[in-house]
View 1 (cartoon, rainbow, N blue to C red):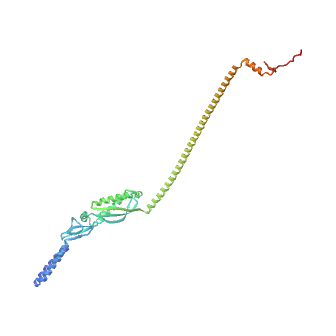
View 2 (tube, rainbow, N blue to C red; view 1 turned 180 degrees about the horizontal axis):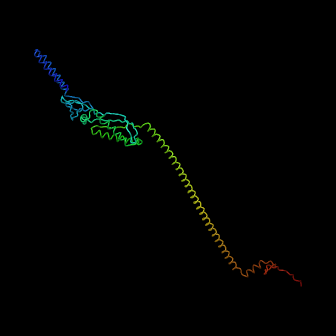
Length: 330
């Protein structure tokens, strides 16, 4: 607008100067002044109708303060001389902040987060018109803190460390969805969170107590397991000893049975042999008895007699001597 007014003043001044110089009969000088004014006015008008939008920015066109629903790209842009251009960056920006919130069990939590965000070119006119260039502090930053408080408020302090990844995911999804409604891309990173020294000391004391209890429980379980294993080994050893005794008893019984059978078999064989021998001897005796006749006996007796009379004879009372009474001589 200033360029337009300046161009009009310059043009009017040039015409006035040329009129005065003509009255003073200085036509050539007036012409020169007029041409110079026209050139300057033309340059000024050209500059008033063009604007350059830097790389990574979006141009927003405004007509007498009214924001147009048009976004201008990078480079040289032409517009009406009474219109102005405001630029907003589309580059990714980073913001880091520390704040305080509370857990479900009302423990104070100090947290630090980082937000990476950028404005989409198509959303720049509406953001500029409805929010302004400080849209991050007005829209994104409060939403991040509200999302953090909501996520922390759902959990007790003791559980927050274990669910840190889930907490960051919830915060990031919430902020990203909210920012998307305004044409803003945003990512939230929960860098760190910590509790008060009193709570931290209490947690450490509790963890120490839990570790000691766990150690005692583990020791007791180990002792119980050792006792169980010892009892199991004793049981197995007893079963093995019993099995060995049974095996040995079975072996002794089998050996006794085998020996008894062998003795029986030997006795049977000996009895059979004796019986066979007796049978054969009886057969031989019978054969011999059958072969000895009175004649054979008399013959054998005559063969073995030496001319001596027997000195004893068998009687009812046993052996009786035979007395040889000599005969008288005749």
